[in-house]
Length: 151
Image: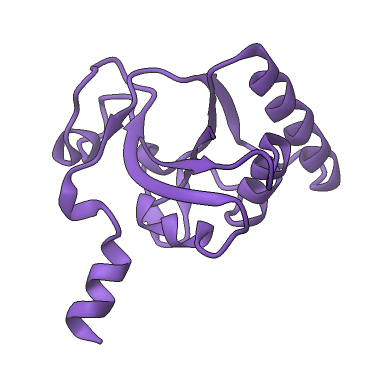
């Protein structure tokens, strides 16, 4: 089992990873800031350097890390700085967090391919994972909870 962490805008978009063969689980969280434990309220304040991310656990016998990176670029707009749809702010930037040199190399390779196809408009950052923190329980599987509550 491996992990992929990416900022695709609002972490409630974790649903975009549902039904992808090889994806085992998703978790909403924060990553990239200076504090090891952070809250939604602090991140929304805009000065923590954290962004909202989805941590995806996957079976690399079914889907490779490179395919996870390619999926990341397909499920959000990597050309909008600090914005995804109606969500605007630093915490919504497009970013891939890596843990190994191999992951960094793969992420940069795919980013460069996508950027070339999009005429240099990609603003996605590739950064070393820093201070990942799981988001509060009420954010986990938020869209599923909302659907169950309001049908």
